[in-house]
Image 1 (cartoon, protein in one colour):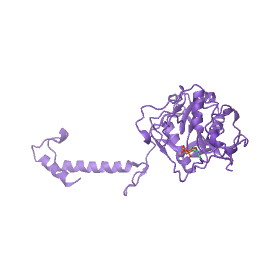
Image 2 (image 1 turned 60 degrees about the horizontal axis):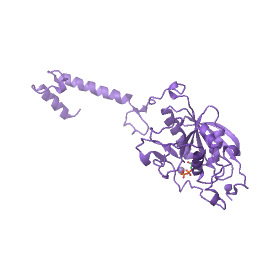
Image 3 (image 1 turned 60 degrees about the vertical axis):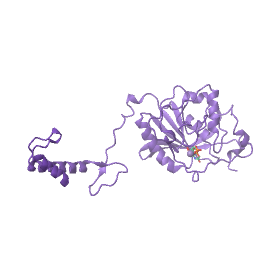
Image 4 (image 1 turned 135 degrees about the vertical axis):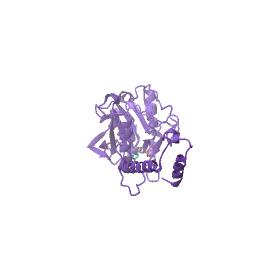
Length: 319
Ligand code: UDP
Ligand code: MN
């Protein structure tokens, strides 16, 4: 307590001065004030002792700190307030280890807070063909089991920062969470990449995604046309005010290079709609299935060997 405060206390006693917020009795002796100060000091010490250090908090000076108790949690997942649906979070993946370490705990926490039942499936492509995001999502869908009834195709490097974003069962049609009005990079109207939710029924109506897209890009644009072809409407978030700050994109393109090579027929083929292929003709083998916990957050890693018909899509090899 500083000297200024003490002078004020003496003045108080000096007579006639207004009572301090009407809380103190009219006659306060120096002794009483001293006692009150002592009590206050003791209380603040006690508070310091009992207080905790949150994540990223400055280290306490000399006062031993203990970690905060966990913040109030949503009710346990068997509570009916979580609703009847369960999401299969399908994450196409290859060599993005640092991103995965951040993604799994973040998404588990984010979805749990929103009471979204979920199972994170990391679709790790382990064959030696070029990356095929769409085929991995098809495999994830086929391997996701009966305990999930809707999917999110979800980039590993896109973290939703706004808790208002809806991840609930998309009854009314495909729900594009990473809308072009919110995605930090892609702003064209027909964009459906990044994060897209679909009921399993709607994904089947599209026959999944085409398996003809090896290397970076275009598979999502082709999927937009499949959605339309199935008579479905893409819906997008409304009332989100965080604009291009809505997601964190953990992607340094110098470090995570996009495989944009277009060889021979791929130049023309990439713009075509695949009317035959999809869920019905994806060729793969599950090499292994591993239950994993990343910083306490559960997920399943599927090691997937895709197969490529090199007559059909000769651009699937690195050449
Ligand atoms: N991806 C991956 N490894 C790769 C290429 C892509 O894991 O070598 C996955 C990952 O989930 C990534 C998504 O595919 O977030 C989309 O690829 P990328 O980030 O390169 O495309 P962008 O949307 O940034 O253009
Ligand atoms: Mn990216």
